[in-house]
Amino acid sequence: MRRRTTAFVTGVLAAVALTAMPFSPTAASAATGQITGLGGKCVDIASASTANGAAVQLYDCNGSAAQQWTTNTDGSIQALGKCIDVTGASTANGALIQTYDCNGTAAQKWTVSGSQLKNTGSGKCLDATGNSSANGTRLQIWTCATSANQAWTVSGGGTTTPPAGTGSIAVAPYIYNGWGNPPDPRTIMSSTGVKWFTMAFILSNGTCNPQWDGGRALTGGVDQTTVTNVRSAGGDVIPSFGGYSGNKLEQSCTSASALAGAYQKVITALGFKAIDIDIEDTAYSDGNIQQRTVDALKTIRANNPGIKIYLTFGSSTTGPDSSLVSKAANSGLAVDAFTIMPFDFGGAGQNMGTLTMQAADGLKNVVKNAYGYTDDQAYQHSGISSMNGITDANENVTVADFTTILNYATAHHLARLTFWSTNRDRPCPGAYPNDDTCSGVSQQAWDFTRTFARYAG
Figure 1: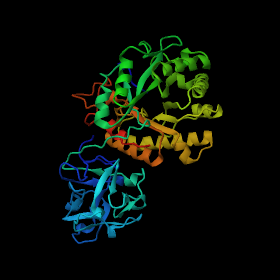
Figure 2: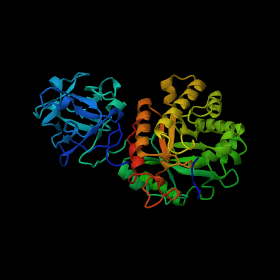
Figure 3: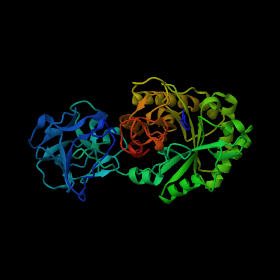
Figure 4: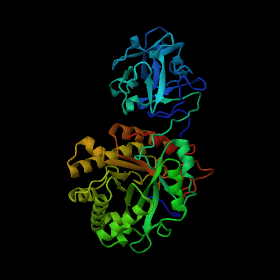
């Protein structure tokens, strides 16, 4: 459910994605703190040894000096008076990481590359061997890949400076001009690196006529201004049709051709390259409306080569039902991502990161069975659209949950990773007001966006 009418965690993250203070030769100053990786484990010197050749491993974070790494301006990383070093200055996959007397060689120099720590001498990335998070897992270098065992969080003296996001179209958080003190998207872009936004919602004005929120013209108002501002900052917008409330085009347009015409009117008005159909509530439960939507999207696909089409809908904790996905497959509709909204399950105190992964695995199975895909192909046509903070069902989705979801998306190469909404991606000044102006959980401004912005697809 998308709320649309009146109705970071700071410090050490249980993280695998990088929130880094860059430690390259051009870094402004050294900083000291933990480096965390797969499973939230810390980069650690085995037995706190100060001998040359001591193993560098993953281990439970314990605050010891063997886990306090100083990132230096020359690109070296140091603890207990020794530097992280590639054994034998090797450039081969699987070369183990050790500590050794600091000597300024390329085997001891590291830079940030996206969410990874890249060794200058080999061009390869710091990697947890065997994709394991068990205590004692040795670290090595390996060809860089977008895998969770090569993503790291580097803390520096209790403060972090996140890297810029990738700007991937896969990450397009929702922004809504109709409610919730809309933020300036350019502020979010400059703070997080995100480039794309999903702008809600295109609705019917009571007939088969598309308008922003069912009452604002497609062009000439605040919504076109938002699109223009995002594009002027180097990004773009995906219009979202539907949502939970209001008159839906999918219901007001009584034929597939009329519905396709309404979709096309929006695409043409502002030159959109992607669309999101957020089909919920009675629109989703009506099989005729599902089929009408599918048939209209087939026309859009045929008439707009290269356009990306996202279908968004609800889910249980075990995944969505197969009705809409099966209709799309049986009709020959190619969708870039079937995207579930894994929240509003009901009940506080649940681990929303875990439940999201469980629901997404269920989606993968539905897509796989409908299209005859492999597991990998099904994941690559699946997406997650979460809700940050306190949900309509009083679940708490935290920044740590978003890190869990990010790592899952990275491991499976999901086609879409988004959330409702940037309007909510701010700390509340007081009690949670339940008006979509803040998240209601511990965070700094734009922490949720910043987390997902690191997704590279």
